[in-house]
Amino acid sequence: MKKRLKVLFVASEAVPFAKEGGLGDVVGTLPRFLKRLGHDVRVVIPRYYKIDRDFYKLQLLPYSLGVPMGIIGTLWAGVYEGKLPNSEVPINFIEFEQYFGRDGLYNDTNGQGFLDNDNRFVFLSRGAIELARMIGFAPDIIHVHDWQTAIIPVYINTIYKQDETVGKAATVLTIHNMQHQGDFYAGLMDVLGVGWEHFNFLELEAFNKVNLLKGGIYHATLLTTVSKTYAQEIQTPYYGYRLEGVVRERAKDLYGILNGVDYEEWNPETDKYIVANYSHDNLEGKLLCKSDLQETMGLPKRQDVPIIGLVSRLVYQKGIDVFAEAIHRLLGLDIQIVMLGTGEPWTHFFFPDMANKHPQKFACKIGYNNSLAHKIEAGADFFLMPSRFEPCGLNQMYSLRYGTLPIVRATGGLNDTVENFNEDTLEGTGFKFYDLTADAIFNTVGWAVHTYYNNKNAMDTLIKRAMQKRFTWEDSAKLYEDCYYKAVKAKRG
Image (cartoon, rainbow, N blue to C red; front, top):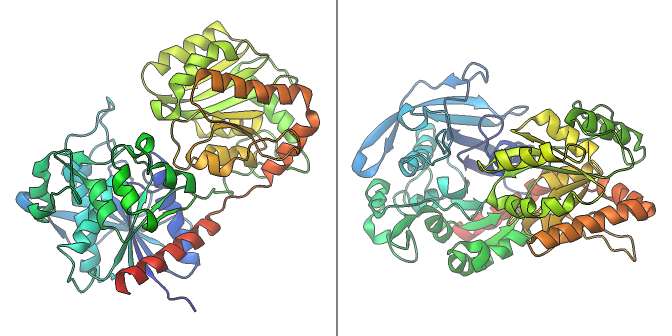
C-alpha cells in the first residue's frame, strides 16, 4: 500500500482565484485530484486584492505570520484560509498590502513588471515555509512552480535544512515557462539571507545577476515540465534561454507530465455556452454551432466554407507576428478566419484593420470572452496554434474534444498531443508544421483546407478520432504521484 503523502503547493497563481496562464490551472486543479488519490494537500498563494474574501468565504486566521526578509528585516502578514472549489483541499492566502495590494499579479496597467517583483515573491516563498512551520504542517513534498517560488528548494537545502517541520521535505520544481526566470540585481542576496557563498555559477548566479529559477533547478530534488517534448526542448539553446546547460546537468531528474483538461467545462455534449450540443456519434449540432459562430462574428453564413479559429494571447511566444505575415495569403483561400485574443499593442490595430478590409472572410475580437471562446471551439472546423514554444497548451486539447482539428507547430505539448494526418492510412488527429515561417503556416492551412474540400472521408475519420482523445487530470495526478515518491526516496534514501 502506498504511503499517504503530505504535499504543500506554493505558487503565484491558482484558479479560480488568480490566473494568467497554465500555471494557475495546474495549481488550482491538480491538488484536487491528488486529494482523491488519498494525499493530504495544501496550497499557498498570495492574497491579491482582486481575490474577494467575502465571495470565496475566506477566514482570517487568528495570528500574524512573521516573514524574515534578510536585510529588510521581519515583515508581518495576515493569513486567510479557504478551500479549492469542489474539494476539501485547504488553500491559504498570504496577505501583505505593500506587495499584493494592487490590481495586477506581475505587471502594472502598462504591462511593465512591478519593480519589486523580486521582494514580492521571495516574501511569498519564505512566508509559505514559515506558515507550514507555524501551523505544524510537515510536508513530505513541497511542490513549487516557476521562478516565483523556485527559491524554496534553496531555502530547504540551506536555512531550513535542520528544521524539524520542513527540513526533511523533498522539493519538486515545475517549469511552466523557461523564458521567465526571475533574474534580478545581485544585491537580492542580502534579502534572500542564504549567504553570499551561494551566489556562484552553479547555484544562484547567472550573468552577474541573481537567477531564482536557476537556483531552483540546481537545488530541487526533482524537476518537471508540462510535456515530454518541452522537457527535451529546454535542454537546447533555442528553448533554454541560456539555462539549457543547467537543465542538461539535471536531465536524469527531469520529467515531462502533460496538464489535464477539465472535461466538465470543455465538453461539447454538455457545454452550456454553445447553441447546440453534439458528440462524435452525432455531429449535427456542430453545424448549428458553425452557423451561430458566423452570426455572432458577423460573417456570411456558409456551411460550405471551412472556418479557422484562433483563441490566443496575441504575443511573440504564440507566433502571432508570423501569422500576421501569412494572413494576406491565407485570405486568398476560400476560408473564414475567426480570432479572439489580446496582447501586444500593435495586434490591437493590425487585426481589426484586416477584419475591416476583409469583412466576408475575417472577424476579430480584441479581448477575452469565455463564452465566445467556447463558441469558437465548437463552431470552427480547424484551430490554428503557430506557437514559437508551447510548454503544454490547452486549446489544442479542447479543440480535439470539439472535433475542431488542430493546425499546430510541432513544439512542446502541441507535438505531444496532436498526431499528424497521414493521407495514406487516414491516421492522425490534426495537421503539423515544423518551421515557424509564413510559408509553413500557409502551406499547412492549405493542406487542411484541401482535405476539407476534397476528402470528406478523411475529415470524418479525423474528427471522430480526435473527439475520442482524452487528456485527464486523473492520469496527470498519478504521474505526479509517482514523481513525488521518487523525490521522497531521493531525499531520504
